[in-house]
Image (tube, rainbow, N blue to C red):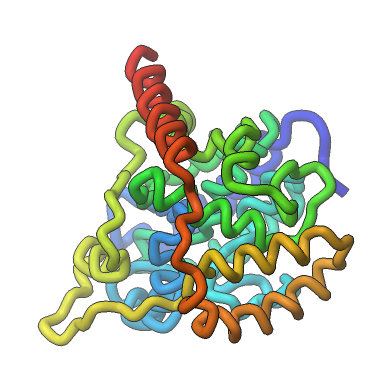
Amino acid sequence: MAIAGSPGSEFTREIAALLESCERETADHSGDRQLKLVIHAGTPKTGTTSLQTYLDKKQRKLRGKGILYPHNIRGLQNPTAPRHQWFEKNLITTHVDRFLENFRNIIAQVKADTHTIIISSEGIYNYWWDFPEQSHDLLRALGKLFKVEIWVWFRDPLSFIESYYKQCIRNPQLGNNPCYGKDLSFADMLDIPWFAKHLDYQGFVKDCQLLFGEHSVSAFEYKGDVVREVIQTLGLATAHDNPTPRQNQSLNNASVALLRTLNRYDLSAKDKESLTTHLKAMNSTLDAYASDCLIDETSAKKVLAMTTTMFKRADRH
């Protein structure tokens, strides 16, 4: 059951005690033992899956550099998946016990030479505006316990919001979500404030700076190969590195049209996932029939106007 009240104090006390124990055990290795916590927050369709797969496969090499990309708790659904979706899920529900359990698991993996922990989930950006104030207390607590650094990649607004629209159409229906699994055109979804809010790149950056500090955010322009950028940032690059292949293929407009048809039915999440698997197989064949543009000219102008307005508003604050 989720815990009401102010959850940050309990979380802070226990994690601080665990970190203090780590500091005592590793006192000879560094005078400054406050761990850096890198939170890779997305955004969607910026090579997130490719990066997570790379970090997961290179865990031993990362450990040799003092970097921990932690395993998930075995009891989680799909625990071997190379991402940390528990982070946003526990924040949405303010489930302190589970959030705490996951951080216990992370700290248990810290070694004497560990200086940086990386967690990654594009859902952090997706659900950022759904986190209740109590969960902001947990995020503030992280900012006190760790040197938090947010990594986020941004695409140009039109390509991003088109991809996010496709993701919303693909997702199973969720009772309190106005966009997931709905039979809505792009123009109709753009009129929904919850959906349009995801264009507020600078608002996300400002929120993170308020929670974790002015210099806590590293915002990157997505240029097609996030893995290569991260390899260079972490000092892991070699002369033999090749461009990273894409892990996920975006659905084309013909597939989106079929998904909207499926969304007219009250499908269970399991049934929709089963049907979507077949749709993925059809996607390449449907490419020949998907030449129409998903975002009409009026909607495109609206997206660009909204983005400009949001940036001007953020600049004034």
